[in-house]
Length: 200
Length: 200
Image (cartoon, rainbow over all chains, first blue to last red; front, top):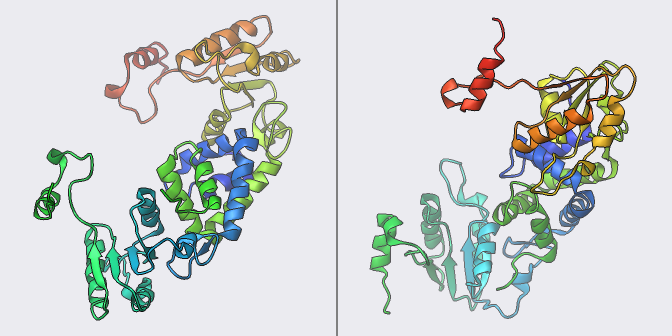
C-alpha cells in the first residue's frame, strides 16, 4: 500500500489525531481542511500554537494557565482575596468564569484522588492549598469539585485536611439544573434538591 | 462575564473550533489538552503546521496536495501513464491509495457539479482533464466519483465532455460492500449488484 500523502502531511495527521475528539479519519479530514484554507486557517493556527507554546505558563499561585504568572485572576484586585474556590481542572475554572459565579480566586488541584488510577494526595496541589488557606484573613474555601465518587472523596479528604484552620469549608449546592425537567432527573438529585429547598 | 483565558489562549480556541469535527466546547478541551502536553504535542503540532504551511503545494498536473510539484504520484514511473482516475476531492484520492487499488494516475476535480450550490463546469478542473485525456497514448479515464446524485450528474457530464476522444470512459462498479450484509443494503445497491454479477 502506497503512502498517498508526503511525510509532512502524514506527520500533521498523526499529531492532529492525538487531539481529544479527533480520530484517524477526522484527523485526515482536519488536515485537508487546513491545507485548503492555508492563509485563513493553517498559517494563523501555526502562529497561535507557537505563541501559546512560548508564552503560556502555569500560575504558581493557583495553577490556572495564562500568559502571566501570577495569572490575570490572581492579580485581579477586585476579587475577594479571602475566598478560594477549589476546582479539579482548568476546564472547570473556565466553566465557572463563564458563569461569572465566583467571588474569589481559584485553586486548581490538577485532578482528584483516585484509588483506581493511583492518584494520591501528594500527586495533587493539596499542600499548596493548605498553605494558601492558612494565610491570615482567609475566610472561606469553596469546594467546586465534580459530583462524582472521586470528586466527593476528594472533597471529604480536603475537608479533613483543612479542619484545623479557621476557614469555613463549603461546597456547591446540589439541585435541579436551571432549565431541567424533574422527570429526567435522578433520585439523588431530586432528594438533595428537596432537602436543600430555599424560600421562594 | 470575565474572560477566563488570556487573548492568546482565546485565539487558539477560536481557530481550533474552525476544524471540522470540533465545536466551541471540544475546541476548549483540545486547547487545554495541548497546553498540558506542551513538549509532546503543542510544540510538534506548531512545527508540523508551519512546515506544511510552507511546503505543501497543489500538484499542477493532477490537483493532489504534496510537498513537490508534480506530486509523488504523478512522478511515479511505475504507474501506467495511460490511465487517469478522476476523483472529487483529495480525500477520495487518499482513500483509493490506502486501498492500493489504482493502476494509473489521478485527476482531482475539486468538487462536483451542483445546481444547488451553484458549482458549474468552469469551477472544476474539467478543461484540464479534457486536455490530459487528449494526450497521445491515453487509454482510459476511470470516473471514481461518489455515488450521489451530484456525483453521478458530474460523471454523465464528463462522459459527454470526453466523448470525442479515443479513450475508454469507465466508472467504479456498484455492488455489495465487502463484509456487508444484504439485509442492511438498499434496493438500488442490491439490484445493481445482481445486474453486474460476476462468475464465481
